[in-house]
Length: 135
Image 1 (spheres, rainbow, N blue to C red):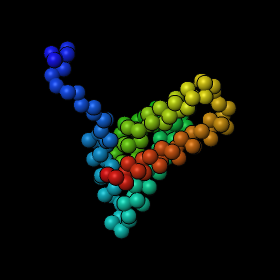
Image 2 (image 1 turned 135 degrees about the vertical axis):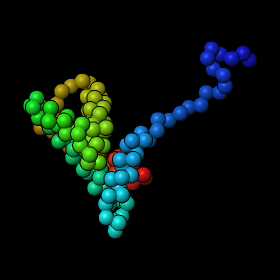
Image 3 (image 1 turned 180 degrees about the vertical axis):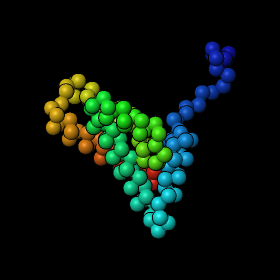
């Protein structure tokens, strides 16, 4: 059988890496910065909680000056939770978009929006906890 255009062998399916190399280094450094007597689960839980708190705090910014200050903090921060929040902030937007489309592109009332944001934050914290625990 002749080669199909551009293919020289069997095509292998590749998954996206769980972590980018720089994120992996940040997570490892952050997990190592906790006291030695803490369990891996405790470290992962605290780190996930801090990252989600940073994501949600930056999401609450509505004033242009607040937004600019949050972006500057993300750009200049050396704290692991802030650095990871900068990289993972799109997860919140991605989940909001998925839910928006699932409900037929209907907007939520402000209190329902706040409740949904809290719910997404809880889910994100759980996913991050599992990822951090495995690093």
